[in-house]
Length: 386
Image (cartoon, rainbow, N blue to C red; front, top):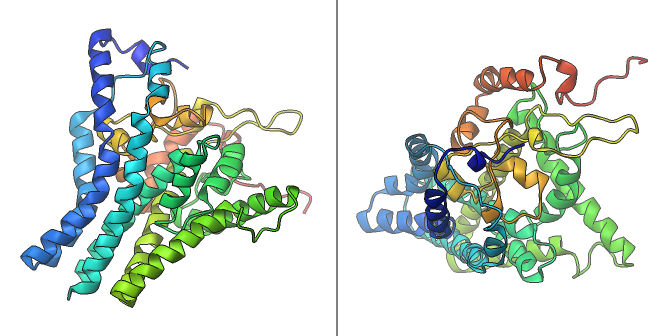
């Protein structure tokens, strides 16, 4: 696979200037959660609950429109930039700032909902917006959680994952999904012809079971019980209970109900991402019974500029799975890998309408497989002997 910037025709000088500018544009990650207090303040100051829809509309209407206008990101880090970018503490500080703004944003909105007399549709807009931003909190936790050799980043992952009560994510994702990705055994890889609603019934409980089983096994190998203070899943869940509990003490049960609703929609954002990232793609099973190594062709990608800044290059998903420890600022785009028709926000909307998703994506899956249905991930096949 060839990195796009190696063949893009863009001058090295322009690419270098853009890479320098991106350093600061990644501040969109900690800035976007501040849409929640902004929307809450505008709604309270102007006495109109319509403002509570602002974060949702920005993420699912404005971002796809701007993605279409801005086009693709032409730049990949050059070989001479890798060491400098990897060592730059700025990129970690961006993530740490996002941890703080995610907690600030959702708690501010919960307080505003508890103290206002809002129509149900205004509360719905606030919950959808907070849930969508909670999906971005899970993204920050995803990035931090991959830095397993850095105890500070690992701890920050547990803190930000607590915003949504999804403390099992790092264990499940790193040790489960990355090992089984694009196979029928992976609960976080969508199968050909499987709707997102069927996928969610398999993926959400599957993630919880797999994450807990993996961590229980790790602790057992150390001679420790699963219910131990050394369990990072329980540490993150404890932070969720503490944070949501304090919000309930200060603002009442309506704040707790709001936080739970926003957390649930945040889980749905993660489910949507998992659904679109590997839909129908299958790693070949080798003669020895093992699957081939995960390669760039086993993930769907989008290189749209704006949403990749917002999503910390997650849409360069092939490079992430090929090199899971590679930090977000170093992720590269490739030619000749599966491409989504648009960015994640619009594709999440399409996925919510299964006939539209199947019409759009099934032909792409079959083209990827060379027309061979046996080369796509259809899930476990029935035993012909039965």
